[in-house]
Image 1 (cartoon, rainbow, N blue to C red):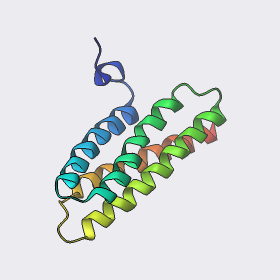
Image 2: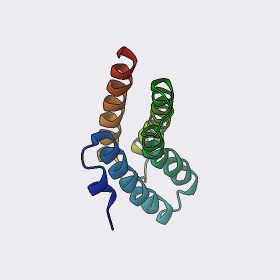
Image 3: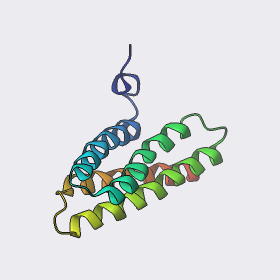
Length: 120
């Protein structure tokens, strides 16, 4: 049986978004253990949705559909960035600076893919 990392080893954004989703799940479990349920729920939804939308874009029907799906992933990434900044600024919340660094990289790569796809 294949692992995600093996199947998509040549697709950087899929690998990064999948790895990010795993980190978000672990961080949200930590938030829940500290009874931070509302933010944990919001962050879990948006943070795991990024990779799901990028994965969905891989089977798009056209270039426009591909770009549209990546733009949805970008919106989810922007929302995720908001929740992470909020967690980072609140007292009694676990450190999430590594997740903020990861989301910056995902946003940057996704933005470049969109710009490149539009110019072709």
